[in-house]
Structures are given as C-alpha cells and as structure tokens.
Length: 75
Image 1 (cartoon, rainbow, N blue to C red):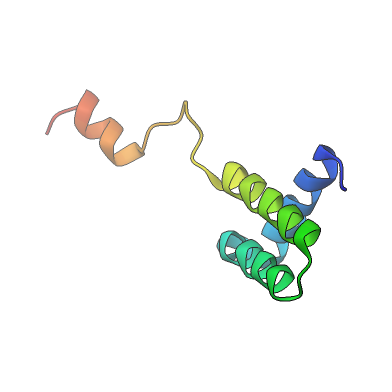
Image 2 (image 1 turned 180 degrees about the vertical axis):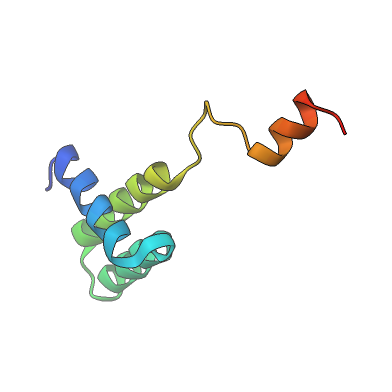
C-alpha cells in the first residue's frame, strides 16, 4: 500500500502526463485493475483519482472572474 504522500505524487505525475485528461485516466486504470481482479490496485487508482480531482478543483478563495465582475461591478 502506498503512503498518502506517494498518492499525491502519483496524482501530480498523472496530471503532468495527461493534463486535464488525468481525471479520466485514473478511473480507466482503476477499471483495468478491476478487470484483472486486482482489488488493491483498483483501490490505489481510486485514491489517486480523488487526489487528481482535488488538485484540479478550483481554489475556494478565487472567484470565477466573470461572475466576480458581474457581482461586484454591475454593467
């Protein structure tokens, strides 16, 4: 079993390799592990998928620029 740090490292590497597609690549690999009967591998890729999603999620403190303008500066 990989450490939490290794999961985040793997997620970062997957994002570097696949960009925005990393969020789709991790579940593909989890499905591959399921097809092979590798439950531990499937769990590992599921954890990596969650880390990828967290890393690619919009940051909480940064509003969408279009919405922020319309809310703070009505036209």
